[in-house]
Amino acid sequence: MRKRKQLKNVREGNYLAEVSIELLETDEGWSPYLSLEDAYKLDEVREALRAKDLEKAKCLAKIYTLQPVAV
Image (cartoon, helix red, strand yellow):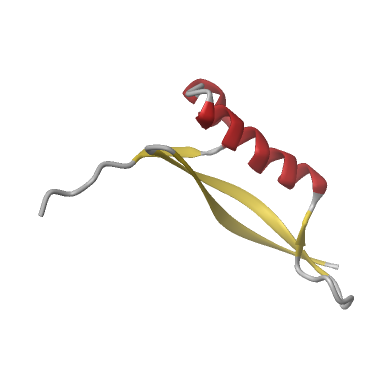
């Protein structure tokens, strides 16, 4: 089994979270996949952003605010 770090983006409303996870690669058919811990981490970040709990979200990820660009 090999592990590879990757960044996943979670967008909720006007916020974007950049979450660091590890992908697990095996020689089996369902590769690569997330560990259960990383899947829960993504869910936690999404729930924190929905609740606008930025303190909790920033403990798990980098948080950005999205703003539309006037053209």
